[in-house]
Length: 206
Image 1 (cartoon, rainbow, N blue to C red):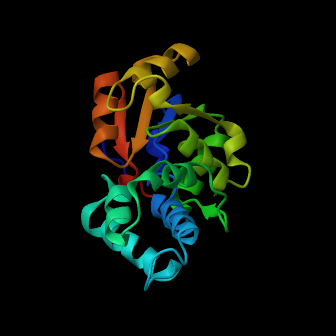
Image 2 (spheres, rainbow, N blue to C red):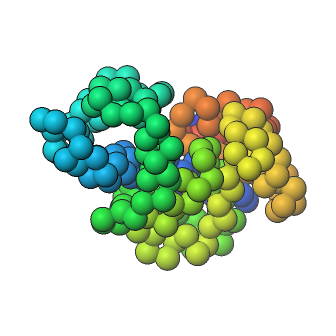
């Protein structure tokens, strides 16, 4: 489903949003987390300080993605693989130096739907502790008080429709009155399997 204006969405009664890269730029969180990890190993790797370690981990991230990122980073830096749990703990629990801003478009959409008294849910994949930490790190300006966050991994990760089914049961709203707003093929497949309409956040003009 594509739309030209947010007003085209007003006939829906329930809105389900993805979190990462739909409401905010996930890299704004990850880059701060990766720097926190590199600060942990500052001075431990000959010829490297936290900044060069950060350059190393970001190069791996941008070239190869997040799959086994910390394993690759530790190996590349010559650090013991036993540090992996500590890297994961920092990723999931660190406090951001600066709050993360939501996308301007997403903020306008959310505020508009709040004014229309529409129920707003966020259905997000990922380690629940990490996702909660991301949410705490975002500068919501009060928007989060009008939203309900559902952690798919506590039910069944997307593209499973289990999270959508949970939300529909919780609200009592019919499928044809619900809209999923996301940014990825996984979000689109989740919506399709859950029997609700989908729109990519990029296709909403506001």
